[in-house]
Length: 118
Image (cartoon, rainbow, N blue to C red):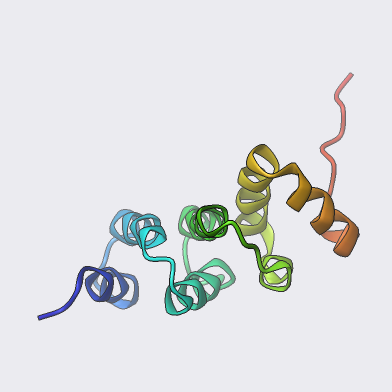
């Protein structure tokens, strides 16, 4: 019998799963903060074949794991792209400004300030 984690992973990689089911599985995987889950979420976050919403959720789930562990992998964060990076950084910036500052110093080209509209 599959564990909860294995069932969630199988939903992600099942060709018949709907996007909303995959998105829920990606979000629920954040409860399992082991290295295998982090690697799967990294793959989902950077895989353009997944829907934009799913990739955003993967970025958010990664940030949730790092925040709960109280340890961040700046290299992994730096490899995130597009919406996954944006979601992860938003969560990190609101919870650990010190991490956000360090990341912006390590990866200045990855941190883009939103323009001020006048």
